[in-house]
Image 1 (tube, helix red, strand yellow):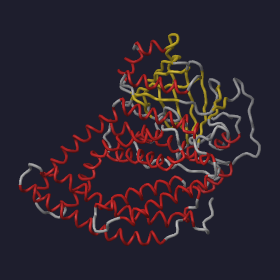
Image 2: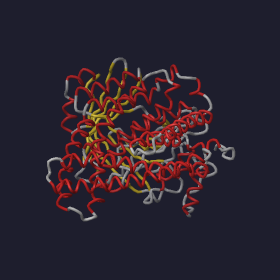
Image 3: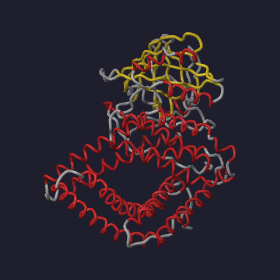
Image 4: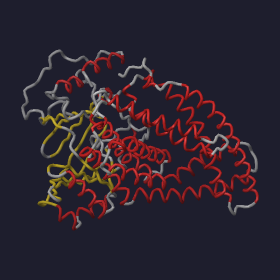
Length: 543
């Protein structure tokens, strides 16, 4: 974020509390100069505290460890204003206290490319030195300017940590066992093993993480920028996936790497919400994240000869299929069945359907949790993290991946649109089932547009995206009807005549809904096909 952007942010807030100094006033450091660094390569592995203790004492860890390691206690405190002004500027301020002293660290919440500038700046503080201390980096100091009297403790973690050096096939790795408790929530505690790549082959670093996951119950988790909770009152907000923005200065390979990293981080964020909290929306978002990976791989496939990404996409497809059963029952019980029950027809029959469907959903959720808890999924997540970090496909990639991003975007968007048009032209409009391929083709087109949307202004792409949304909504209604027919048969089997009557009513209602949606699809497609795609409109110049 540029200084001018930060100034405009405060101007939009209507306050004059923050103004960038024309000349930064750097203090003389009593202890040490600031340490600027890039985000280190780290992997978090989590499990129950007892399992982490068992791993620390295991033969595998003892074989990997160099020396004895050491215990320490530390306190990690994040500061911000009451209205989260520092976070709005794109930075975090954390003070770490341990037996080695106090350290202030300012970090970018959205890290920059390494060639642009540092992502963190650390300053060693005196025992009673006030914060924030001057970091010596102009942009970081400007972000903190004017907030001295407004900063307050936003979150605090106290942790016991065992640190050791690990050697694995030539890679030097820092290994920290953290047992931490959040001060603001006395009943909460967590345990995590953090692996940090120090030197040596990156492949060996990821091999070490896979070896640990295979030999224990530890599973990869998403590490935050610090150990502190980001959501007030410790509530978890699933939200939408972070946007992957293709900058005008990027090359196509950059966008591919951004997307794979985004998907890897998203699935690590969602996994505990599914396994431990059984949140249906998290399950749905997990499937969306993996579908985005698969759609992106398909988009880039003609330009890749390395099979890494294609193999990951195939494995992802198997995972989404296993999760899909639980998702179908979620939709049936939260949307399809309640809508049919509002008619008041055959209430006893619908009640029997509901309880039978709940049992089916419980069975499907057990399989979903089993899928995401096993080593197979852990390896998939670690393999995806490694791919996003090392980009192995670049060794033999087509030269188009290092060429002009706009030309590449036009080419792949044209291809996706042509496929969707061909599917629509070949579609048997008398059959509802025959419309499903169009739904898939439009979904892939939308994912492609979203991948490159930052290259165009919002007003340029919005009408086109609106037409796709209309079509997808109608096609989704048809798909929901088709799935509900299968599920209602399963729920009604062996439940008696009243349940069969209720199933017949629901079947008829969903079929009627699908017929209405089919008419809407025909009208919406004609309007969509008549539009000039925004990337081909001569009046739409790229950003």
